Each structure stands twice: as structure tokens, then as C-alpha cells.
Image (cartoon, rainbow, N blue to C red; front, side):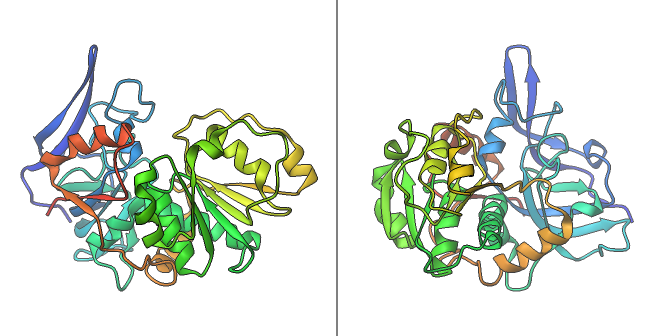
Length: 332
């Protein structure tokens, strides 16, 4: 079945010799990549990875021109797959979306059927993108820690980068599950907001970014790290015996300087939360949890909203560390 749309709007980033040309353009379905499913996009969201995809040497964009947007939600308008039906409400995120495959910053998207997740009951397409990649990553991190054995009452659970999308979602989800949450942020003015999300304690980013000895005092029963770099090294050195940290970010850098001491003397675990390549059955199961026991208590509160014309300043603000929580993009 073929979509009959003749033209649509999209935010496009195109590499040039002197930088990146980015802005809203008019495209046609012929500009879309191959895939069995075409979606009329209703909502997307703005993520750190999207910002990197639109700047020189960001290390994310694999094609040019590229429609960024690593997640999207909307209605299926054409499908050549027996598993996806026209009229279905669906969401898509991860895989190559928004990196080497045109993504969610467009009114129309075409994707492989194997990337498509049915919209869970109880979520609107907007709410799905308020959660988006950030909420999914946070949910995956929580699940990894619980599979490791973490339970409410075990002790304080640390969330780094707590003012960002993944971090704020993790704070809210963990608090909603009954955990004692300590939120780490470099933005002291966000303390009251993080406490409103459920954080019991706030610690400074500087406290956790200082160089740590191979082992420090045991503090955390578990951790979600959205920062990486020296912060992750410090977290590893301060985990309790047998604890785990789910690592899902690298805003402080890709390099990790640590020792084997936390692993062989305390039996801690470094758990990689790879949200881009999660197998589809596990992906669907986590989304069911995001609509259920992991659903943030104030999912619709304090969410910024822009349209295609308002994306660019948000991308810049994310790279400058000036964005709180989540920003969604309205396409429909």
C-alpha cells in the first residue's frame, strides 16, 4: 500500500565544507529511505544525540543530508508488512533512526517493520515522546539494575546527570518504585525540581567528578549514570559490595579511567544500557512497563513543546547544557 502524500516538511541537516547547513525544507516521499512502514509523524522529541547529528564533527550523522530525530510516534499510513496495519498507532526509536536513516523531525517517515513498536495502551503519542528515547533508556537502566538484584529498601540509588532527559526520567521512575534516590547535577538551581520528581538528596556534580582512589567509601546500592568519564569512574569506586551501575551516557567523555579494584574486591557490575539496539521483544516489554509500573508520576508536567521551526535553538541549548528535562516536537 502506498502513501499518497505529495510533499511534507522536515528539519534537515546537510554537511558542507565549512560546516552544517540545517533548517526546515520541503521533501517528497521519494526522499524517504526504504522501509515497509510509512508513518504520519505526530510527535518526536529532542535529544542530545540529535544535537550531535547537526553539528560539525558531532560523530553521529552517517549520511548527508539527514533528517535527525532518533524517535517518533504517529499513525501508520502505509504498510507492506503483515505485522503492521494502516491506522495503527506506533512508536519508533533507536536502531539507525536519525543517524543513517531519516528520523522523526519530519511530518512523514518510512522505516523497516522490525523497528516498529505498537503504542502501549494508556499512552498517547505525545506521552510516548515525552518518554521517548530518554524515558526508554531510563526504563532499560532500571530494569538492568533490578535484574541484577536491586530492590527498594536496599539503600540509596544514585542518578547522575539528573537534570537531563534520561536522568530526570530515572529519578522519577526510581522514586515511583519506592527507591531512595540521590540525584547528582551540576545545576544547583534545579534542586527543588529534582526533589519534586522524588529525589531524597541532591549532590553536586563536582563531588562526583573529582578523581577517585581505586576504592572509596561504599555509598550506593545502585546507580544510573548518564554522564560517563570521571563521574562513572567515581561511581564505580563508591558502589557497595555487589552493586551495579547502569551506564547510558557520555556527556563527560568517552574515556573511562578506572581500576579492577571495584570489580574484583567488591564484585560490582558495569551494566551497559544500549537503548539503540535492544531486541524488539525486550523493547516492547519495556514499553509496557513504561506505560505501567515505570510510568513517571508527573509525565505531562513541565514538558517544553516546539514545532519544526523551533527545533534549532533547542539543539544548541542541549549542547550548552541549558535544557531541563524533556522537549517534544509537534509535527501533526
